[in-house]
Length: 203
Length: 243
Image 1 (cartoon, rainbow over the protein chains, first blue to last red):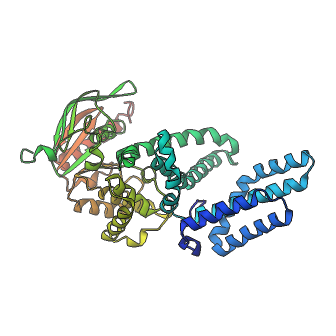
Image 2 (image 1 turned 90 degrees about the horizontal axis):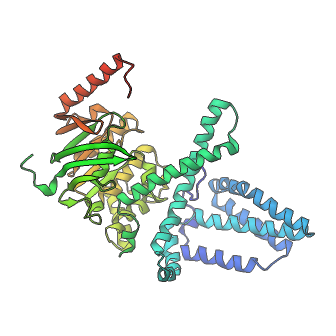
Image 3 (image 1 turned 90 degrees about the vertical axis):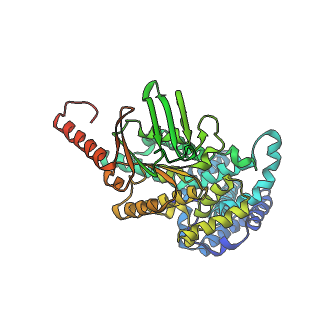
Protein backbone atom coordinates (compact mmCIF):
# COMPACT_ATOMS: atom_id res chain seq x y z
CA UNK A 1 0.00 0.00 0.00
CA UNK A 2 1.15 3.50 -0.76
CA UNK A 3 1.67 5.53 2.36
CA UNK A 4 3.52 8.65 3.31
CA UNK A 5 5.17 7.01 6.28
CA UNK A 6 7.52 4.03 6.24
CA UNK A 7 6.23 1.49 8.73
CA UNK A 8 9.57 -0.21 9.21
CA UNK A 9 12.06 1.97 11.05
CA UNK A 10 15.24 2.82 9.17
CA UNK A 11 18.42 4.68 10.07
CA UNK A 12 16.80 7.87 8.75
CA UNK A 13 13.99 7.55 11.33
CA UNK A 14 16.60 7.99 14.04
CA UNK A 15 17.92 11.31 12.71
CA UNK A 16 16.38 14.31 14.49
CA UNK A 17 13.56 16.00 12.56
CA UNK A 18 15.16 19.47 12.70
CA UNK A 19 18.25 18.11 10.97
CA UNK A 20 16.30 16.47 8.16
CA UNK A 21 14.07 19.49 7.60
CA UNK A 22 17.07 21.83 7.83
CA UNK A 23 19.03 19.87 5.23
CA UNK A 24 15.95 19.78 3.00
CA UNK A 25 15.45 23.55 3.28
CA UNK A 26 19.16 24.23 2.72
CA UNK A 27 19.32 21.91 -0.25
CA UNK A 28 16.36 23.54 -1.96
CA UNK A 29 17.92 26.98 -1.46
CA UNK A 30 21.15 25.79 -3.06
CA UNK A 31 19.50 23.91 -5.91
CA UNK A 32 16.91 26.47 -7.00
CA UNK A 33 19.27 29.00 -8.70
CA UNK A 34 21.49 26.28 -10.24
CA UNK A 35 20.88 25.36 -13.87
CA UNK A 36 23.75 23.01 -14.61
CA UNK A 37 22.64 19.69 -16.05
CA UNK A 38 25.38 17.61 -14.33
CA UNK A 39 24.48 19.14 -10.95
CA UNK A 40 20.80 18.20 -11.38
CA UNK A 41 21.69 14.73 -12.60
CA UNK A 42 23.81 14.39 -9.46
CA UNK A 43 20.83 15.55 -7.35
CA UNK A 44 18.57 12.86 -8.80
CA UNK A 45 21.32 10.24 -8.51
CA UNK A 46 21.75 11.26 -4.87
CA UNK A 47 18.00 10.94 -4.28
CA UNK A 48 18.00 7.46 -5.83
CA UNK A 49 20.96 6.45 -3.69
CA UNK A 50 19.08 7.70 -0.64
CA UNK A 51 16.06 5.52 -1.46
CA UNK A 52 18.30 2.53 -2.10
CA UNK A 53 19.91 3.09 1.30
CA UNK A 54 16.46 3.21 2.95
CA UNK A 55 15.60 -0.21 1.62
CA UNK A 56 13.13 -2.03 -0.57
CA UNK A 57 10.00 -0.56 0.99
CA UNK A 58 11.27 2.96 0.30
CA UNK A 59 12.10 2.13 -3.32
CA UNK A 60 8.53 0.96 -3.79
CA UNK A 61 7.35 4.43 -2.71
CA UNK A 62 9.01 5.85 -5.83
CA UNK A 63 5.74 5.21 -7.69
CA UNK A 64 5.02 8.65 -6.33
CA UNK A 65 6.94 9.95 -9.34
CA UNK A 66 4.52 8.23 -11.68
CA UNK A 67 1.72 10.34 -10.26
CA UNK A 68 3.89 13.39 -10.87
CA UNK A 69 4.80 12.34 -14.42
CA UNK A 70 2.12 14.37 -16.26
CA UNK A 71 3.20 17.52 -14.45
CA UNK A 72 6.88 16.87 -15.17
CA UNK A 73 6.08 16.15 -18.81
CA UNK A 74 4.13 19.38 -19.08
CA UNK A 75 7.01 21.30 -17.52
CA UNK A 76 9.44 19.82 -20.04
CA UNK A 77 7.09 20.41 -22.97
CA UNK A 78 6.71 24.04 -21.98
CA UNK A 79 10.47 24.61 -21.96
CA UNK A 80 10.92 22.79 -25.24
CA UNK A 81 8.19 24.88 -26.82
CA UNK A 82 9.86 28.06 -25.56
CA UNK A 83 13.05 26.90 -27.26
CA UNK A 84 15.23 25.49 -24.47
CA UNK A 85 14.81 21.74 -23.97
CA UNK A 86 18.07 21.62 -21.97
CA UNK A 87 16.61 24.01 -19.40
CA UNK A 88 13.45 21.87 -19.42
CA UNK A 89 15.47 18.80 -18.54
CA UNK A 90 17.19 20.73 -15.75
CA UNK A 91 13.85 21.87 -14.34
CA UNK A 92 12.36 18.38 -14.48
CA UNK A 93 15.38 16.80 -12.82
CA UNK A 94 15.45 19.48 -10.13
CA UNK A 95 11.77 19.06 -9.34
CA UNK A 96 11.89 15.26 -9.40
CA UNK A 97 15.00 15.20 -7.19
CA UNK A 98 13.55 17.59 -4.64
CA UNK A 99 10.19 15.78 -4.55
CA UNK A 100 11.97 12.50 -3.90
CA UNK A 101 14.13 13.94 -1.15
CA UNK A 102 11.23 15.77 0.50
CA UNK A 103 9.21 12.56 0.36
CA UNK A 104 12.09 10.67 1.97
CA UNK A 105 11.94 13.10 4.90
CA UNK A 106 8.16 12.65 5.24
CA UNK A 107 8.51 8.88 5.05
CA UNK A 108 10.99 8.71 7.89
CA UNK A 109 9.75 11.39 10.29
CA UNK A 110 6.91 10.96 12.75
CA UNK A 111 4.31 13.67 12.53
CA UNK A 112 4.69 14.87 16.11
CA UNK A 113 8.46 15.24 15.68
CA UNK A 114 7.93 17.18 12.48
CA UNK A 115 5.36 19.44 14.11
CA UNK A 116 7.63 20.14 17.05
CA UNK A 117 9.99 21.75 14.55
CA UNK A 118 7.35 23.43 12.42
CA UNK A 119 4.98 24.69 15.12
CA UNK A 120 7.28 27.44 16.44
CA UNK A 121 7.64 28.66 12.84
CA UNK A 122 3.85 28.73 12.51
CA UNK A 123 3.43 30.67 15.73
CA UNK A 124 3.17 34.10 14.01
CA UNK A 125 -0.02 32.75 12.37
CA UNK A 126 -1.68 33.02 15.78
CA UNK A 127 -1.51 36.80 15.34
CA UNK A 128 -3.97 36.60 12.47
CA UNK A 129 -6.20 34.17 14.36
CA UNK A 130 -4.97 30.90 12.85
CA UNK A 131 -4.18 28.29 15.50
CA UNK A 132 -0.78 26.63 14.84
CA UNK A 133 -2.19 23.51 16.46
CA UNK A 134 -4.97 23.38 13.89
CA UNK A 135 -2.47 23.64 11.05
CA UNK A 136 -0.33 20.92 12.62
CA UNK A 137 -3.39 18.71 12.99
CA UNK A 138 -4.39 19.27 9.37
CA UNK A 139 -0.96 18.19 8.15
CA UNK A 140 -0.96 15.11 10.38
CA UNK A 141 -4.39 14.14 9.12
CA UNK A 142 -3.27 14.49 5.52
CA UNK A 143 -0.40 12.06 6.12
CA UNK A 144 -2.79 9.70 7.89
CA UNK A 145 -5.48 9.75 5.22
CA UNK A 146 -3.41 9.46 2.04
CA UNK A 147 -3.12 5.65 2.31
CA UNK A 148 -6.81 5.48 3.18
CA UNK A 149 -7.77 7.51 0.09
CA UNK A 150 -5.63 5.27 -2.09
CA UNK A 151 -7.43 2.26 -0.61
CA UNK A 152 -10.77 3.96 -1.24
CA UNK A 153 -9.84 4.53 -4.89
CA UNK A 154 -8.77 0.89 -5.21
CA UNK A 155 -12.04 -0.31 -3.68
CA UNK A 156 -14.05 1.79 -6.16
CA UNK A 157 -11.90 0.51 -8.99
CA UNK A 158 -12.50 -3.07 -7.89
CA UNK A 159 -16.26 -2.72 -7.77
CA UNK A 160 -16.17 -1.04 -11.19
CA UNK A 161 -14.10 -3.86 -12.65
CA UNK A 162 -16.26 -6.50 -10.99
CA UNK A 163 -19.20 -5.25 -13.03
CA UNK A 164 -17.60 -3.83 -16.18
CA UNK A 165 -14.47 -5.92 -16.58
CA UNK A 166 -12.17 -2.95 -17.16
CA UNK A 167 -10.58 -0.18 -15.16
CA UNK A 168 -12.80 2.70 -14.11
CA UNK A 169 -10.26 5.46 -14.73
CA UNK A 170 -11.60 9.01 -14.67
CA UNK A 171 -15.17 7.77 -14.32
CA UNK A 172 -14.39 6.98 -10.67
CA UNK A 173 -13.63 10.63 -9.97
CA UNK A 174 -17.18 11.69 -9.08
CA UNK A 175 -17.95 8.74 -6.77
CA UNK A 176 -14.48 9.12 -5.28
CA UNK A 177 -15.16 12.75 -4.39
CA UNK A 178 -18.51 11.85 -2.85
CA UNK A 179 -16.97 9.04 -0.81
CA UNK A 180 -14.18 11.35 0.30
CA UNK A 181 -16.69 13.92 1.50
CA UNK A 182 -18.59 11.22 3.37
CA UNK A 183 -15.34 10.08 4.94
CA UNK A 184 -14.47 13.61 6.01
CA UNK A 185 -17.91 13.92 7.58
CA UNK A 186 -17.32 10.80 9.67
CA UNK A 187 -13.86 11.94 10.66
CA UNK A 188 -15.11 15.38 11.69
CA UNK A 189 -17.72 13.71 13.87
CA UNK A 190 -15.10 11.49 15.52
CA UNK A 191 -12.85 14.47 16.07
CA UNK A 192 -15.56 16.45 17.82
CA UNK A 193 -16.41 13.40 19.93
CA UNK A 194 -12.90 13.71 21.35
CA UNK A 195 -13.19 17.41 22.07
CA UNK A 196 -12.41 18.91 18.68
CA UNK A 197 -9.49 21.11 17.69
CA UNK A 198 -10.31 24.36 19.45
CA UNK A 199 -10.13 22.68 22.80
CA UNK A 200 -6.60 21.51 22.11
CA UNK A 201 -5.37 24.97 21.24
CA UNK A 202 -6.55 26.21 24.62
CA UNK A 203 -3.62 25.10 26.70
CA UNK B 1 -32.13 1.74 39.18
CA UNK B 2 -32.89 3.96 42.16
CA UNK B 3 -29.58 3.19 43.89
CA UNK B 4 -27.52 4.71 41.07
CA UNK B 5 -26.87 8.43 41.69
CA UNK B 6 -27.80 10.83 38.89
CA UNK B 7 -24.18 11.68 38.15
CA UNK B 8 -23.74 8.09 37.00
CA UNK B 9 -26.90 7.90 34.93
CA UNK B 10 -28.04 8.86 31.45
CA UNK B 11 -31.33 10.75 31.69
CA UNK B 12 -33.51 11.56 28.71
CA UNK B 13 -36.51 13.72 29.42
CA UNK B 14 -39.17 13.78 26.71
CA UNK B 15 -36.60 13.94 23.91
CA UNK B 16 -37.58 14.51 20.32
CA UNK B 17 -35.00 14.58 17.55
CA UNK B 18 -35.42 15.41 13.89
CA UNK B 19 -32.89 14.74 11.17
CA UNK B 20 -33.43 15.86 7.62
CA UNK B 21 -37.05 16.80 8.32
CA UNK B 22 -37.85 13.33 9.67
CA UNK B 23 -38.57 12.59 13.32
CA UNK B 24 -36.02 9.93 14.31
CA UNK B 25 -36.74 9.93 18.05
CA UNK B 26 -40.20 10.69 19.40
CA UNK B 27 -40.89 11.90 22.95
CA UNK B 28 -38.35 9.53 24.42
CA UNK B 29 -37.83 9.40 28.19
CA UNK B 30 -35.24 7.04 29.61
CA UNK B 31 -33.13 6.64 32.75
CA UNK B 32 -30.11 4.41 32.20
CA UNK B 33 -28.13 3.62 35.34
CA UNK B 34 -27.16 0.02 34.69
CA UNK B 35 -23.50 -0.81 34.17
CA UNK B 36 -24.17 -2.61 30.85
CA UNK B 37 -26.90 -1.39 28.53
CA UNK B 38 -27.55 -2.76 25.03
CA UNK B 39 -29.37 -1.01 22.19
CA UNK B 40 -30.89 -3.10 19.40
CA UNK B 41 -33.19 -2.40 16.50
CA UNK B 42 -33.39 -2.34 12.71
CA UNK B 43 -31.28 -0.01 10.62
CA UNK B 44 -32.83 3.43 10.75
CA UNK B 45 -34.59 2.76 14.06
CA UNK B 46 -32.74 5.64 15.75
CA UNK B 47 -30.06 3.70 17.69
CA UNK B 48 -27.10 5.68 16.34
CA UNK B 49 -28.96 8.97 16.75
CA UNK B 50 -29.76 8.09 20.35
CA UNK B 51 -26.11 7.22 21.01
CA UNK B 52 -25.06 10.56 19.50
CA UNK B 53 -27.33 12.36 21.95
CA UNK B 54 -25.25 10.90 24.80
CA UNK B 55 -22.08 12.76 23.83
CA UNK B 56 -23.67 15.88 22.38
CA UNK B 57 -22.84 15.13 18.74
CA UNK B 58 -26.58 15.59 18.29
CA UNK B 59 -28.74 17.86 20.42
CA UNK B 60 -32.45 17.22 20.96
CA UNK B 61 -34.96 19.44 19.20
CA UNK B 62 -37.03 19.35 22.35
CA UNK B 63 -36.52 17.81 25.77
CA UNK B 64 -33.33 17.48 27.76
CA UNK B 65 -30.44 15.03 27.90
CA UNK B 66 -28.30 14.76 31.04
CA UNK B 67 -25.34 12.39 30.99
CA UNK B 68 -23.48 11.63 34.20
CA UNK B 69 -24.42 14.97 35.68
CA UNK B 70 -23.74 17.02 32.54
CA UNK B 71 -26.29 18.75 30.33
CA UNK B 72 -25.29 17.83 26.78
CA UNK B 73 -26.45 21.19 25.42
CA UNK B 74 -24.72 23.34 28.05
CA UNK B 75 -21.62 21.43 29.20
CA UNK B 76 -20.13 20.82 25.77
CA UNK B 77 -16.53 21.40 26.86
CA UNK B 78 -16.62 18.84 29.68
CA UNK B 79 -18.56 16.19 27.76
CA UNK B 80 -15.84 14.61 25.56
CA UNK B 81 -13.81 13.65 28.63
CA UNK B 82 -16.81 12.14 30.38
CA UNK B 83 -18.20 10.20 27.41
CA UNK B 84 -15.94 8.01 25.29
CA UNK B 85 -17.37 7.16 21.88
CA UNK B 86 -16.29 4.29 19.64
CA UNK B 87 -17.48 4.45 16.05
CA UNK B 88 -18.32 1.61 13.69
CA UNK B 89 -15.33 2.17 11.43
CA UNK B 90 -12.00 2.71 13.22
CA UNK B 91 -10.61 4.36 10.08
CA UNK B 92 -13.01 7.22 10.68
CA UNK B 93 -11.83 7.63 14.23
CA UNK B 94 -8.05 7.40 13.97
CA UNK B 95 -6.65 10.78 12.99
CA UNK B 96 -2.89 10.25 13.32
CA UNK B 97 -0.41 8.25 11.24
CA UNK B 98 1.21 6.42 14.16
CA UNK B 99 -0.19 4.64 17.21
CA UNK B 100 1.61 6.72 19.81
CA UNK B 101 0.42 10.03 18.34
CA UNK B 102 -3.17 8.83 18.27
CA UNK B 103 -3.15 8.10 22.00
CA UNK B 104 -1.09 11.17 22.90
CA UNK B 105 -3.66 13.34 21.10
CA UNK B 106 -6.37 12.23 23.52
CA UNK B 107 -4.12 13.05 26.45
CA UNK B 108 -3.26 16.47 25.03
CA UNK B 109 -7.01 17.06 24.73
CA UNK B 110 -7.22 16.67 28.51
CA UNK B 111 -4.64 19.44 28.90
CA UNK B 112 -1.44 17.43 29.28
CA UNK B 113 1.65 19.04 27.69
CA UNK B 114 3.07 17.27 24.65
CA UNK B 115 5.98 15.43 26.22
CA UNK B 116 4.01 14.26 29.23
CA UNK B 117 1.25 13.12 26.89
CA UNK B 118 3.70 11.06 24.81
CA UNK B 119 5.16 9.45 27.93
CA UNK B 120 1.72 8.69 29.35
CA UNK B 121 0.61 7.28 25.99
CA UNK B 122 3.52 4.84 26.10
CA UNK B 123 2.62 3.65 29.56
CA UNK B 124 -1.04 3.30 28.55
CA UNK B 125 0.06 1.04 25.68
CA UNK B 126 2.21 -0.94 28.10
CA UNK B 127 -0.73 -1.34 30.52
CA UNK B 128 -2.70 -2.93 27.69
CA UNK B 129 0.23 -5.16 26.79
CA UNK B 130 0.85 -3.33 23.49
CA UNK B 131 4.07 -1.41 24.24
CA UNK B 132 5.55 -2.62 20.94
CA UNK B 133 2.82 -0.84 18.96
CA UNK B 134 4.05 2.66 19.83
CA UNK B 135 5.81 3.52 16.57
CA UNK B 136 3.68 1.42 14.24
CA UNK B 137 1.94 3.13 11.35
CA UNK B 138 -1.80 2.78 11.90
CA UNK B 139 -2.42 1.65 8.32
CA UNK B 140 -0.44 -1.51 9.07
CA UNK B 141 -2.81 -2.53 11.92
CA UNK B 142 -5.57 -5.08 11.33
CA UNK B 143 -9.21 -4.04 11.74
CA UNK B 144 -9.34 -5.55 15.22
CA UNK B 145 -6.09 -3.87 16.23
CA UNK B 146 -7.40 -0.54 14.97
CA UNK B 147 -10.59 -0.93 17.00
CA UNK B 148 -8.47 -1.83 20.04
CA UNK B 149 -6.36 1.31 19.46
CA UNK B 150 -9.52 3.43 19.29
CA UNK B 151 -10.60 2.06 22.65
CA UNK B 152 -7.21 2.67 24.29
CA UNK B 153 -7.16 6.20 22.87
CA UNK B 154 -10.59 6.88 24.36
CA UNK B 155 -9.92 5.19 27.72
CA UNK B 156 -6.86 7.36 28.47
CA UNK B 157 -9.26 10.31 28.74
CA UNK B 158 -10.76 8.40 31.70
CA UNK B 159 -14.41 8.67 30.69
CA UNK B 160 -17.14 7.41 33.01
CA UNK B 161 -19.32 6.29 30.11
CA UNK B 162 -18.28 4.38 27.01
CA UNK B 163 -20.64 4.32 24.03
CA UNK B 164 -19.89 1.84 21.25
CA UNK B 165 -21.76 2.16 17.96
CA UNK B 166 -21.60 -1.21 16.17
CA UNK B 167 -17.93 -1.80 17.00
CA UNK B 168 -17.97 -5.45 15.87
CA UNK B 169 -19.23 -5.04 12.32
CA UNK B 170 -15.91 -5.57 10.55
CA UNK B 171 -14.36 -7.99 13.05
CA UNK B 172 -13.93 -11.75 12.75
CA UNK B 173 -15.32 -13.89 15.55
CA UNK B 174 -12.11 -14.41 17.60
CA UNK B 175 -11.35 -10.67 17.47
CA UNK B 176 -14.90 -9.82 18.42
CA UNK B 177 -14.82 -12.16 21.41
CA UNK B 178 -11.55 -10.65 22.57
CA UNK B 179 -13.02 -7.15 22.28
CA UNK B 180 -16.13 -8.24 24.19
CA UNK B 181 -13.94 -9.59 26.96
CA UNK B 182 -12.02 -6.31 27.15
CA UNK B 183 -15.32 -4.40 27.37
CA UNK B 184 -16.46 -6.77 30.15
CA UNK B 185 -13.52 -5.79 32.34
CA UNK B 186 -14.05 -2.02 32.06
CA UNK B 187 -15.20 -0.11 35.16
CA UNK B 188 -17.11 2.37 32.97
CA UNK B 189 -20.80 2.34 32.26
CA UNK B 190 -21.11 0.84 28.77
CA UNK B 191 -23.80 1.41 26.16
CA UNK B 192 -23.39 -0.99 23.25
CA UNK B 193 -25.15 -0.90 19.89
CA UNK B 194 -24.74 -4.16 18.02
CA UNK B 195 -26.47 -6.53 15.62
CA UNK B 196 -24.57 -9.48 17.15
CA UNK B 197 -27.42 -10.35 19.49
CA UNK B 198 -25.52 -12.91 21.55
CA UNK B 199 -23.14 -10.15 22.65
CA UNK B 200 -25.74 -8.95 25.17
CA UNK B 201 -25.89 -12.18 27.21
CA UNK B 202 -24.28 -10.72 30.34
CA UNK B 203 -25.92 -7.30 30.04
CA UNK B 204 -28.12 -5.73 32.69
CA UNK B 205 -30.63 -4.20 30.31
CA UNK B 206 -31.42 -4.19 26.60
CA UNK B 207 -33.58 -1.61 24.83
CA UNK B 208 -35.18 -2.40 21.50
CA UNK B 209 -35.78 0.73 19.45
CA UNK B 210 -38.28 0.71 16.63
CA UNK B 211 -38.92 3.80 14.49
CA UNK B 212 -37.72 6.16 17.18
CA UNK B 213 -39.69 4.62 20.05
CA UNK B 214 -38.93 2.01 22.66
CA UNK B 215 -40.51 -1.21 21.46
CA UNK B 216 -39.31 -3.20 24.46
CA UNK B 217 -37.07 -2.64 27.44
CA UNK B 218 -35.82 -5.17 29.96
CA UNK B 219 -33.51 -8.10 30.58
CA UNK B 220 -31.49 -9.19 27.51
CA UNK B 221 -33.06 -12.66 27.18
CA UNK B 222 -36.71 -11.71 26.55
CA UNK B 223 -35.97 -8.50 24.61
CA UNK B 224 -33.54 -10.16 22.21
CA UNK B 225 -35.93 -13.09 21.75
CA UNK B 226 -38.88 -10.81 20.98
CA UNK B 227 -36.78 -8.87 18.47
CA UNK B 228 -35.70 -12.09 16.78
CA UNK B 229 -39.31 -13.34 16.64
CA UNK B 230 -40.48 -10.10 15.05
CA UNK B 231 -37.79 -10.35 12.37
CA UNK B 232 -38.89 -13.92 11.59
CA UNK B 233 -42.55 -12.92 11.43
CA UNK B 234 -41.69 -10.18 8.97
CA UNK B 235 -39.83 -12.67 6.85
CA UNK B 236 -43.07 -14.59 6.48
CA UNK B 237 -44.80 -11.46 5.18
CA UNK B 238 -42.39 -10.24 2.50
CA UNK B 239 -44.68 -7.49 1.25
CA UNK B 240 -44.14 -5.34 4.32
CA UNK B 241 -41.70 -2.49 3.74
CA UNK B 242 -38.70 -1.95 5.92
CA UNK B 243 -36.97 -5.28 5.50
